[in-house]
Image (cartoon, rainbow, N blue to C red):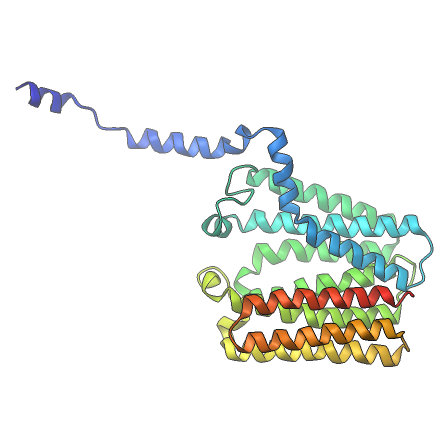
Length: 307
């Protein structure tokens, strides 16, 4: 009888109440992290490495266009840095569900930063970057506004058509060189040619990353390999790398550049060819990692034009 009484009076947990507490805790999770932990999380959202590369590309475009106003060069470089950072942060804002499935350690899934904080952080970065572009000249401002729009639209609406997003990402990389040139008050034909070469290499690497992530993206995104198959996608990658190689060598001939440029362009070309071979062996991860090295060689070659 005692056993039965205890059994009857034993209360079941209130599932509804538990659920409410869990939801409440989740909403307030980011508030529990101290400011000193939020700052590294916000910096992580920015992906500093990508933004520094954008900054360097802008300075290269400025220098190759014979720019002499170094304060304008710095303003342009910082403008590109902040717009790039805003694009990285807004991407995490829209992709938080995907990121939560892939890694709980990322800023938003971990709770170190809330979605609202990430959104306002990206808005602040975009405003700062565009304000700096406004202080340069009207064309720089228009470029900044256009790519701010694309960097917001891409993660907001284009996950289902990521094959179009590849062009936006590659175009964003290429436009940094042109943005630096525009900051001088004109546009250098040499910088445009170098930007085109960079565009081809970057879109090849973007498609390679999609091949690598085919399984991971299967239920969330619509990529080129999903539409045409991996084998056809590999042909696109090969074609774009070859276009980048041809463009790089033609630039040497057309603009009568120095031997230092040619050496590093040939090195990058060799790396791109090796990346193609790795991809044909279904080693996409290694292929796109090698492509980064090839792009670094190209960047060094661009800088050595100034010698």
